[in-house]
Length: 147
Image (cartoon, one colour):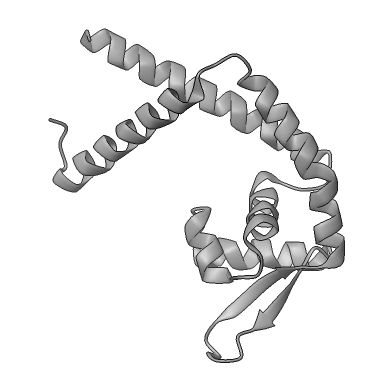
């Protein structure tokens, strides 16, 4: 691969990522959510009650940002905090009935829209390649250089 091919690929990948993020933001805004709120609700919808710290790590949010998002979703009536009975330091987030119903309504539509974007593409190989690029980038960060 020519050096310019790699740089062009990075540019295309970043632009595609930005376009996808913009589309998701637009879509979830129609439900009165921002993308981060949707990510938290989606995570809880698929994984059930989770410690707030775990959610933050999975969707790449700092603890301060996570607290803010949980507060907002709690104000909207979509989730509640639950104390862990065995460890007072841990607080769980759980979907309310309203949160569950919202996700039952919007998640199938969201999935359909996202699937349409990738229609006709071979995703298995693409996913593996993107993972490989991500792992190489992480390894390069650790050594503070690219080999």
